[in-house]
Image 1 (cartoon, helix red, strand yellow):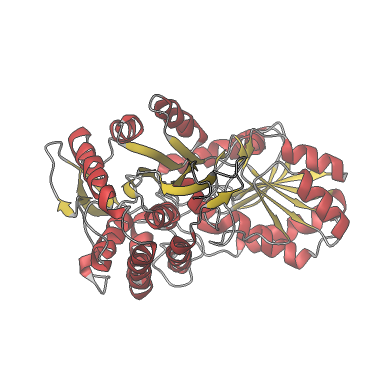
Image 2: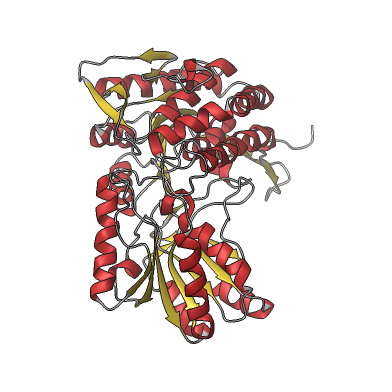
Length: 488
């Protein structure tokens, strides 16, 4: 790949037991650039045999990896982090090539992705058990934390680096081994991370990456194989339900970061400059293709018209184009099917009486490009307010009272993230505590960080990623009761 400084990071092959698998009996599939439609690579299709081999190699590696000291694991994981920092520019370019986001955002994703590796390298040395007061003087009760085992990580296309490191880093730090199944649209970033893991000295079989677009076959095996003890998934709620059902047969430990329908509330006492910036960040990051994107912007009546005008003006000024081009702020969507979904949501809103203030159509660039769009007069019955659009479409919903805003925000099966803008401290506390979501951004549209627990409630998922809570998802608690410790 000519645009990379280190061409060794372009690895169109699966990583199984420390070896690069370039061919399988099942043939290959094509990986296309979403901005240009050009062929990026032909990748091997892994199915049952290759997935089984990856699981078995991870299980074999687990037996020795779990016995390494926390300090040694921390040193190797930190070396992995240093290599990510060193190769940040190449990794960002790979992200933009296969996912489409602007290069500036891809660089930001690499900062975010590597931050998890650094954080959990440090957390590896902080896994602690407990000594519990016993009911008898002759007893001692000890609780240990031990790695759960082989972990299957199934990751989405929208953040192809961060969604892997947010899972793999705590797993490796805990002493687990990993089999990663990246999205078939964005596997090259995963392979590059695998190459750097090898260079960091992480032993063979500890970090495996499966390629292929036979997702049901691979996912079905990862969730049913007896050697896999943990499944971690980021993606849609629909797929999450399937994976949970499949995992139930072998009672696997599961963590799920699923769909969202994030409300963003702007109260009439908000700082409008801050609110505009916050809404733009929360909506248009990664062309709106984020699980925590503001899917519904709820605006209090007193400032509705003023805020709508400013958001429309800012939206019209956004530069759309190939993510590798200078100054681009909005890249392509992942494919034309995603564009069609945005069009359908917008058409439903307009048919119901909503008004387009900015954008509203496929971009002149064609292909997977869509104009960033603001639509006013949206009501809660419209599809755009009830389903996750996952695109650059900003619906504005008017509300009157605080209670109405909270009720509208919570009127969803999802509960991943929410946002609010207000200068009234009492209002902030009341609203934030009342919102049914796992995360709340207050006077900010950017809430993702490695130091905070990321995750949702209701049908937005199970468990938390990041922070000191994140490593617990990859640990089991073992209780030991010693008796016979009376005086000699």
